[in-house]
Length: 531
Image 1 (cartoon, rainbow, N blue to C red):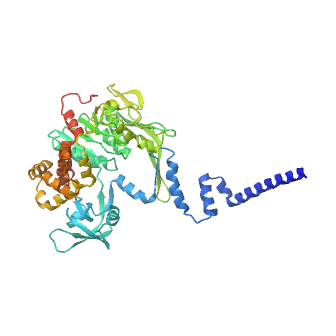
Image 2: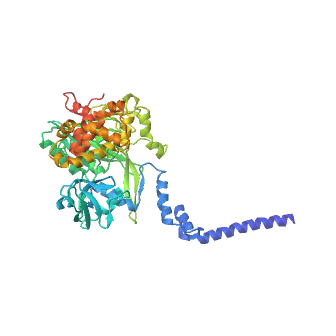
Image 3: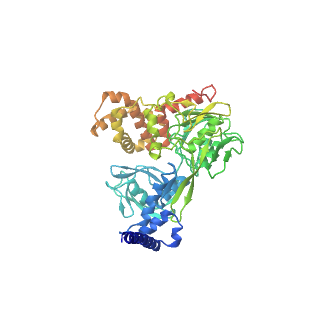
């Protein structure tokens, strides 16, 4: 009897397992069993889960989590975000052609794009957009996203905009046909002095090369024979754009960058011809937020000894992404290779400890004093690499500048922090420019704005404005941060009237990195010098 019971029990367990496996097999189609576990899980959930679920949302949420296991720059772009990503990189979108700011729950026109639909119809800086179509654009619920949604649209479509203009009793109604509005990637270009040009590049997009060449032509026509190219804060962009741009600084055949990966053969990029600006004195400005294409640009100039890199160590993003589209309009940017400078340096910093640790690297740099002392910088790759003139450089985490300029924290104070936290400088500057627009529009340069605004003691008036808005006067804080606040006030007022050239020409007076660059590029010493 014990033996019989044992055999019966074993047979029962075996039969139960067989029946359960047969049941699961019935749930999962034969062709699915050959597919991935992810497909199986989704199908099992769809067919058998106790509650109704949105399987599409499950997949959309799962993909980014999967990609986090790879590297910090392999990303998933949902279909809803693709339009914005495409617009930013192609350099244009469909819209009415205004720059706006939401102040006091009102959409205020800051500037009108030259040649755009709004300018052609007579819309001006200082106008208030109070209605778009049937939607009211006034109140606490008005956000940037809503304004973008209402004003942007396909080229050729129409939108009705109602505007309040100071001095007029009634609203103005404009029926605007949307057009292609450029997104400029060259933020500004102007002459710092009679011989020195300055170009700030915000990113590398589809039309950046053309913008850059136009900016350089403008500077040369003004007499510039040397140029400072500012890549600080530039997150990167199209490889093709940076290749074409840096080629204009190099000689024929000089190396720019190469890529290689597990499944990707080595691919080299060289200057095809002698560049138009080969031999011109060049300084490149970089900082801890210069990444990817910016680092390729700086690395090529440095390794070929074609200019001096000034600032602080760059971010360290040297991974090559390939964008792969899906049927629903979404896409994945998959890392397929790494970037290396001409000397063989890998630009990419380590990400072995995960994404959170990777992005915490900048915080660690601040804590360890790297932003203040060059001696505190520790490059991950201690192997020596050599530039064309046999100068020693290091890799393994960004581009180390030839001349280090620490971050300037001397003007920081708790008083300044409160002012910036409330956005008082920007608000006061906009209100002042709006109130005095007719008079200020007669001024043409940043220097003219500075002279006039100092005579009018605008800084003292601002201090009173700050008190009314909850920031009490602090003698120590004002003494420490006064120059920064006053300069920012003048720069923002100038920007509201004459644009970016007015802003940058004023703000440059408190920009230590740019001031060092001007001294370096105008010196009689050799341009490239490690300090």
